[in-house]
Amino acid sequence: MSGNQAFLDISDVTVAFGRSRVPVLNGIDLKIRRGEYISVIGHSGCGKSTLLNVVAGLLDASGGGVVLDGREISGPGPDRAVVFQNHSLLPWLTCYENVRLAVDQTLSKTMSKAERHEWTLENIALVRMTHAKDKRPGEISGGMKQRIGIARALSMKPKVLLLDEPFGALDALTRAHLQDQVMQIHADLGSTVMMITHDVDEAVLLSDRIVMLTNGPNARIGEILEVDLPRPRDRLALVADPRFIAARAAVLEFLHHRHTAPGLAAA
Ligand SMILES: Nc1ncnc2c1ncn2[C@@H]1O[C@H](COP(=O)(O)OP(=O)(O)OP(=O)(O)O)[C@@H](O)[C@H]1O
Image (cartoon, rainbow, N blue to C red; front, side, top):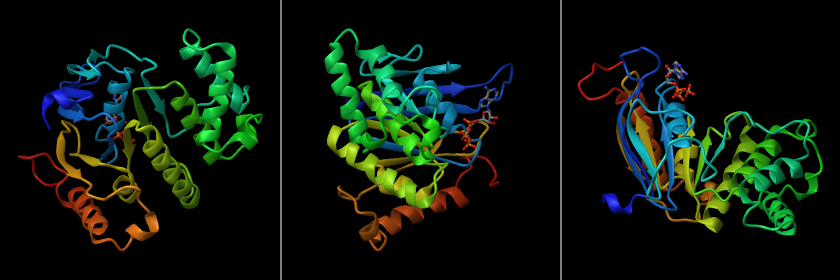
């Protein structure tokens, strides 16, 4: 991919914590196109969340930098909305109020009060949560909380959606429903998504490319797999699709046998 195609340009990012001289991540280069769905996968502790936090602007890289749509990232901003594994809704607000708060914080200069109300409802409808919009987080399931978290993130009209294991804490069926919804939203809105996951099937189902990190410390990009599957994707049909099976096998093979950086002994 040529440099000028990058919408999100992660360039030579290195992160070392505290006084440690051994970086967690070392020289991460990744160029993401507008509208692309990227998954980052790797063993526990290799630095996936660290990378996402650098892109979110929640953490400063020790070296390198990130440019989004031509602007260098130097802190958190509404152009990058994050959805974490553990839903971070404010418990004393209703679902509507949680989304509305984000809308008011980011769009009050560009939308009237009535428009913000409509926009809030629209985003809640997008994740099919209209029926529970007046409930508080304590009154709804984990999957529903994640849906509101996604609605809140989308309502900010971010340039990039950053998903840090958004389905990780959910049961298999709820997880599948939410993956399908996110696929639909990605198709409808053309969102650019960077998602951290541990789940190989999830990565193959959702992604245009899967970025595989080597084990840390000094984690690097070991390999990037293009997922050559037409959209829309149907999870049931894909189970028997040789391209799905091959992509899945390639990621598993990397995770089991080739997760060490070049030049290091196998773990
Ligand atoms: N604030 C911090 N201070 C010191 N070390 C940290 C900090 N945050 C993360 N680390 C270390 O950096 C490494 C990478 O952590 P990170 O959470 O990014 O990994 P991960 O791949 O997302 O892990 P998991 O898949 O288990 O969530 C780990 O060794 C972790 O202990």
